[in-house]
Image (cartoon, rainbow, N blue to C red; front, top):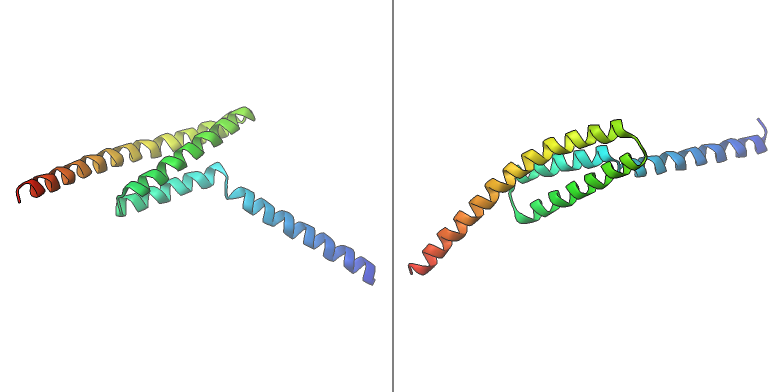
Length: 119
């Protein structure tokens, strides 16, 4: 190989690596990534229930809903339906945990109010 052909080959490799990196970055914001993010956040919320964790989950659900609408706009109905079903399953789990957390929070607030007024 000559020096000029090696330079062309290295440039081609650089372009391919940059393209691959761009695909990886773009893939992180995919609906599948958002579903994984929701699952991770649900698992975290189970272990550490808190209001900020609820907010994070709600933002992730808004994000997946927007991704599903984008898929529908692109007329990729099979993918949209797949992610909608996964999101619905996760949303049911989220709503059950949120209801239990809110009920527990209200009980704790009532208990603290009763303890505070009894002093």
